[in-house]
Amino acid sequence: MINHCPVCDTEYLEGEYERCSSCGWDLTPVPGSASSKLRKAFLAKQQIQIDWARRMWVRQQMQGEFTPHPAGKFNDSERFSQLENQVDERFNQVTIQLQEARGERAYLQSQIEWISAYLQGLNFQQIETVLSQVSEWIQGSAILPTQGETAEPFYPSSEVGIDYSRLMNLLSKGKWRKADEETWAIALKATVREEEGWLSIEDLERFPKTDLATLNWLWEYYSHGQFGLRVQQEIWERVQGDYTAFCDRVRWRVQDNWIYYDELDFSLEAVAGHLPAIAWRKRSCYGVGKSTAQEALITLFHSLQNI
Image 1 (spheres, rainbow, N blue to C red):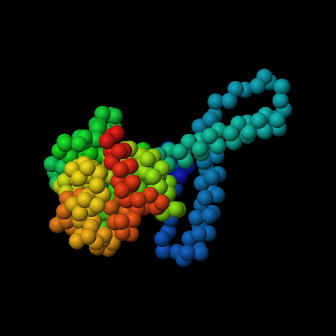
Image 2 (cartoon, one colour; image 1 turned 90 degrees about the horizontal axis):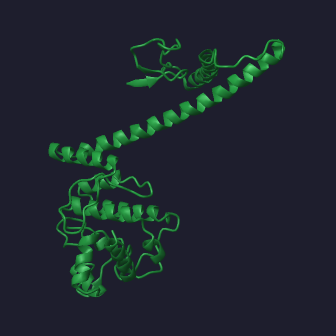
Image 3 (cartoon, rainbow, N blue to C red; image 1 turned 30 degrees about the horizontal axis):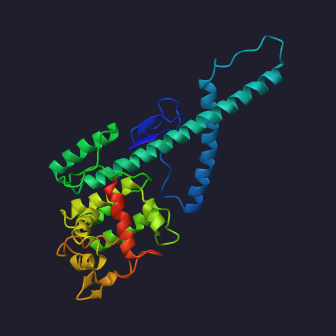
């Protein structure tokens, strides 16, 4: 495992080095068998030593960087004070840079772990396709599949920093109810309505287009075209926007009875367009807030047409 020296940030392999090759800091791991109280005391004392060592390291690296003042302009005390201030300023700058670098490394590591976990559920051919599309996404040339195209794996995109890994994991395992609940949670997060717990027409109108397309694609891909917003949109157009007829087609209404959420068929045996249920949550004859389910569907489908 690659670690970084706490003093100079030099990389080293854990267990292979006793001291840093750059600054000489003792890299012996913190004892793990000591009691919690002793361990905390040890870590606190070590942090003080690390802070002091960083200052010394920065000061050493800065030797020769300061412009000397004409002889006699300052006495030794003033010269030392000025040098100390310069050292402190540079030390603070280096500390900030180290913190930023560590943050970037932590972010990249989390992305690598996410991609690794996702790829574990794919076969070799799918992995090759995903890696190719990740490369296209990085280069800025990846596009989302349009209506009528065969959906192929792509790197999920978000305008608002949504992490789709949990949804992808649930869909890939066929956990359709949990996936639908996660989709609703994502919808609330994407529109910043987590605290309210419901969506208005205005919320749906400003739903991030990229995230709407991503949600649709994930449902279509993992259900093999059985579920998804575009599937629902096609059925909606066939019934000419008649919400009752639409619900009869997607089994949100059975024998003239509007079904409750717990009555949904969370399996691939369900009819086309049965999921996801973003337009309503409690019962199909209700909406998702102050709007009706019909109004919510019209707004979502209108946004899909503009993607």
